[in-house]
Amino acid sequence: MAPVNNYGHHHFPEKLIPLFVTNLLDGKKVPLYGDGGNVRDWLHVDDHVRAIELVRTRGRAGEVYNIGGGTELANKELTALILDACGAQWDTSVIHVEDRKGHDQRYSVDWTKIREELGYEPRVKLEQGLREMVQWYRDHRVWWEPLLERAVL
Image (cartoon, rainbow, N blue to C red; front, side, top):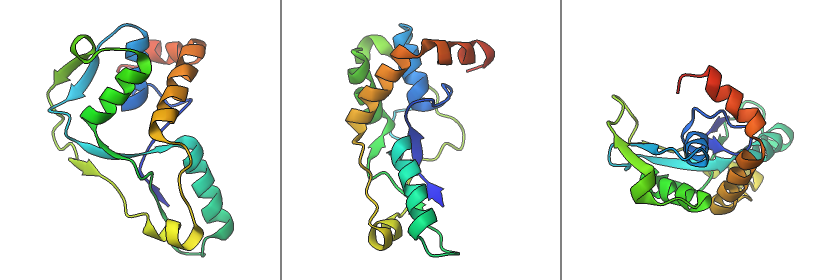
């Protein structure tokens, strides 16, 4: 199985979405790489788990099933959604930083097989999942704050 980018509760805060959420909750700016045009497909962790279980129970042995989210966005579009979910403004919350060398312009998979053969469709819409994730991080500082203290982000 090969998935796209995941997001959701308990996501380590070094990754894009939880990093942006935790920064915004702490009143910090978020670092947007380059022009923010890098495109990713996003999948809520609960949908990812459902897909794995579907492949485990109904998939054909030896087959590869790509797991997609069906929500491809440029990072600047995703940033706008995260800002909205956190109640933050672009002009006071975003700082553009130099893009990483070798940073993929687009990361996506063809997940036709899991949809057509197994009937898989994600259930959690990105905007809903982001709102729930922001609330989870607001409610669980005791979980993520120690991780930030130990990590070099």
